[in-house]
Length: 118
Image (tube, rainbow, N blue to C red):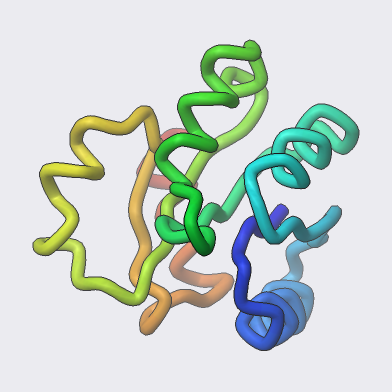
C-alpha cells in the first residue's frame, strides 16, 4: 500500500511497482485513509510519505503500532528529503526503513525487504 498526498506521485509509483511485480492493494492520501486501508487490506508493505500535508507519516506509523497493525507489515518511510537530513527523525520512529523518493523502485523496495529479513 502507498500513503502519500501527491496524486501524481502515487499514480507513477503504483505503475512502477506493478511493472516490477508488486501488487499495490490500495492507496491513501492521509492518516485516516491510511489507517482504514491498513486495517481493511492487511498489506505486507506500507510505503508512507513523511509529509502528508499537515499530517506526518511518522504519526501514522505510531498509529499502526498503537492499534496493533504494525506486526503484520513492513513500514517504510519515503520522502524527497535526503536520508541524512532525516536520520534523527527516522531513528525516533518505528519505521522499518527509509527510502528516498528519488531512488524509489521495485528493486529498491525488494532490497529493503531482503535487508529486513522478508
